[in-house]
Length: 237
Length: 248
Image 1: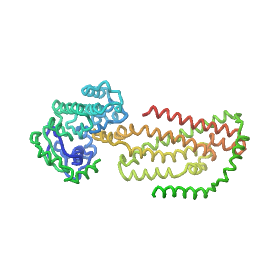
Image 2 (image 1 turned 45 degrees about the horizontal axis):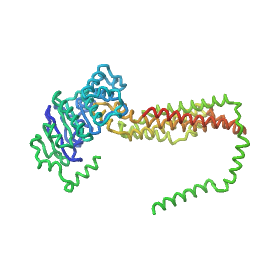
Image 3 (image 1 turned 180 degrees about the vertical axis):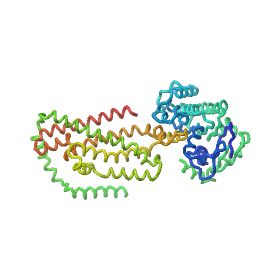
């Protein structure tokens, strides 16, 4: 499977189909059992920890449960997006430069949360938390954005707002996007390419227009036919 | 049926252990004498040595605070190495775990007795004993807190290209801090009580004063010392609650 720069890929599939694993294999939050992941011609899977950290700096990520840094301020959370770029001692001591602080605040302004910069992240709503995560990505300025169910724990209106931010990243900044989605209609609305996973295998790869109801039935097989899916799902949670 | 067996097991355990310590109902008949002993010999309080007693109370507090702070500071980095989800290698994990368990398994009293011949009487053997034992205790408590921490933030720091150290600083430390503080204050309270016991082997402080006065039958002085102990323990408990309330 090859993903071209500038694509917006949505990965569909049932729980346990391997969507999270696939996404995490790209930046090696999960190590692949076999196979190679290439990034601009370099093998990510063959990199040493130092090289991997540099590449991770170029790959943004948003998560279903936001994964903000608890008990820290919104501002610090966004500043964390700059870890890969700033001198190590600055990140370690939290002694962020004035330039970085300003940049983080600009990122927060873009997602409309600048006035909450000094609040603790626990005080925010789910939608606000995901917007902080987006601001963290803006701070990071990645070439590729990975998303593991970024809108699955949000209500419809908030989800749309978050998807709009991701679309803006894609359109205005040319960020390549790969998202796991639960919501087929969101995938159709935003993606330029859809990949269907069924029990760990690619069963669909095409444009949103090519995704027919028959194809969907292959990606989402009914329960009783596939015990493995259930077993996998339990293994995953 | 299983409940019945459980209850029976507890009763049997109680009878067996009770007979071992000759705990019989007859002993309660003498409790009246205990009450009379306290009433006649322990009151009124003898406040004549209050300055020395207060000084001793501060000594006790200093020993306990210094030892637990030093132990916590030493155990904190070790705990990360002894946490399965952070340690860089299995080999390091196993050796630090072994060390921590060893430190924790030796009672403070034994450690203090071991140090007395070389360090002499006074607070030093007690401080050493408390530090070593508490490195073991904090090491276990903190490393288990790290292992139970939410891995979401840790994953986020990793995904941002953060090193293992950054994962600890931003992904783990902030979320475990309230629990670590809570563990600290509990251990401080325990350390105060242990310091009192170690007073018997010459560590100084209120424990030694109490022990000496008791041996000389000066129970009225002992009463005041017991009151001071109660004030000390309650005060630390109150302070701990206050600080924990602010760090949430």
